[in-house]
Length: 185
Length: 185
Image 1 (cartoon, chains in turn brown, purple):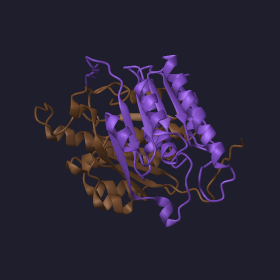
Image 2 (cartoon, chains in turn orange, purple):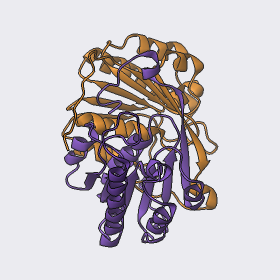
Image 3 (tube, helix red, strand yellow):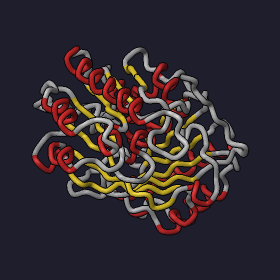
Image 4 (cartoon, chains in turn purple, blue):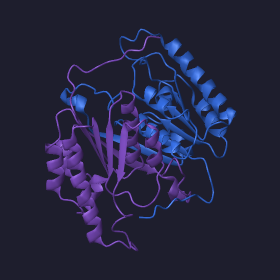
């Protein structure tokens, strides 16, 4: 069978939003990173909220021949009961992630910039809507941007080209099954 | 910051279904494959319906140090107008993919088996519900199985541990933007 390779007549950066309460938002962004390496594209992933819990993608992306850079900011889950890190420190971290995002945009070294859990960071007021808008508005024409996390802001959805909402129909942990490595983290 | 690595007390294979009409089903499965390689887990991906259109993940997974095997069956999109391949040939291909899935299950060499677009194959009657049930029932206890594709069958959803439905809120192609490499394929 002959494999067809298509190319768009016009290369254009897309803004993608992956939101909703179901499993698969960060996972889907990781899948895009993997797919992009099939084209030798360069990807930067900035994780806004991921905390101190190891996740397999941190080492997974290291296999991708230097094409994918993953930077995890954040100091554990924010704003849940029993959290030992004060809100002000979470906000400072998220603000650093905003500055880092702007830096990566200006570097012009990437084809895709993934802002993982940025929607939550905005929702929890760790960053401001104006900051997200500035990031989106400053993006070069050919840069793809992927924004993940539940509760995406309506203004972000308005600006986006492609928006998927992932609905939880069922989740294993609701029947008492522990999270499993490689699947859940 | 100290990174916590957790391990479940009980390792258990999960059945995951990723369905719905939105973007991100295959992508999310690819993300799980990437994440799993962070644990040196072995993954087999069998694509039931993907056709003769090149997709970046085909070369992306080759970067993963032999941990991920991807086999694409299928001869182009099935059952759409203008398709040159007769239905009987599509069915034969999908039947081969079922046999291959059973083989991979029996080989006991994988931690995750991804059956990409199997839900569509079932919906288009290229395979039968009994065959999908047999695959699910024959899986070893620790094998994770991921079934993707729109229109997941209710019986498959019933058996699954985690089910996500991806809803299309917006898609770039609806405003005339061409599919972009690394993002859409």
